[in-house]
Length: 302
Image (cartoon, rainbow, N blue to C red; front, side, top):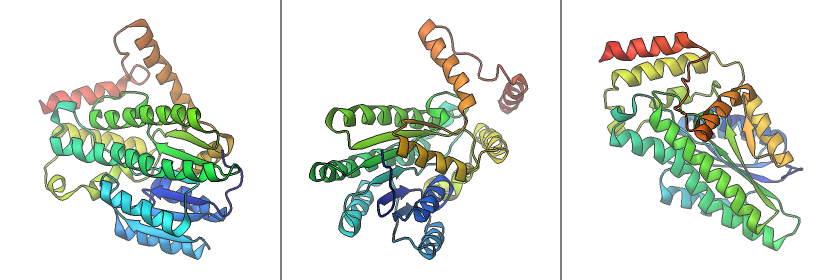
């Protein structure tokens, strides 16, 4: 846990928008050095200008978090400029919907590349730097926060690729927490599991790589996109509020971070399904009209 953020260094992926940008804004207000990484150059440039104007020391790098070499270059630059980071926010993510068998190899590679491999690279590169700093100074404290989703604890239909990526991030984060606890009390970990929050992730297609950008989406993908757009745009919790929850959790050493605690009831139902070996509960049991709408749309597409 980190009690005092002033003068500490934060590394943030997906820093040009959404949670990443809002966490960076709070970090700037708290006097942190900020390392901003994003695939979208124009969004990154705007964020860097804003946060420098707010008085923060900023290192900005455009990169693809799924690329090992680019992430290794980022880690090297961070070490040279600021030393080991105190807060690492592995946050970059993309959304993708559609029936699971309609997802192409390119869909899988893109979503798992950003959502999972981006986190893997952040963990494998920055954790050793943080542990080294902790060994050298008993007072040093660090924390890693990985962005998953409620889709990492549930399995909503028509979102298979995304669900798989986020379940893997939850598993990685829980294991990271346990592994860190074996070797140190100075470096902690958390997993952020937001529900529908307006962040811009519903417009992930803007950053789809060339071969995917040219591909025509399937009917189920279009239906999934429309439903996600509606749910996200109607979200009442803001990205700024979630960013504050992140800092509160880091200061408290809290592992699970939820934007919508009431959604945990659905997680409990899923875990009871697992424990009782009963078939998965209808995810639309509380809102049957949504399930009817989705089934009608998908069957009409058949």
